Image 1: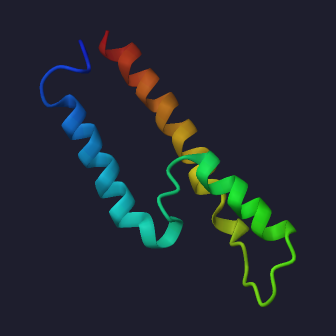
Image 2: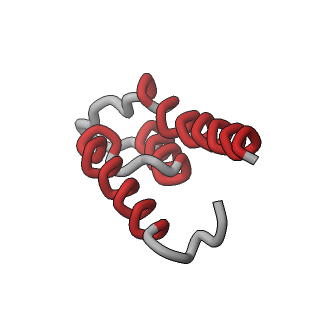
Length: 82
C-alpha cells in the first residue's frame, strides 16, 4: 500500500469519512468512533434528564462493532494482497 501521506490517499480517506458521516449523521451523529457514541449514550441513560427519550440501545452495536469488523476485514485484505 506504500506511504500513506503521498498522493491522493489522505484526500480519499477524508472524503470517505465525510461521506459516511453525511450519509449516517442524522442517525448516529457521526458515530463512526465507538468512544464518541457509547460514552454519551451511557451518560444519557444513567443521568436523570427530564422528558428524555430512548437512548436507542438497539442501534448501539453498529458504531461499536462496525469499526472492529472493518479493521479485521482491512487486516485480512492486507494479508491476502501481500
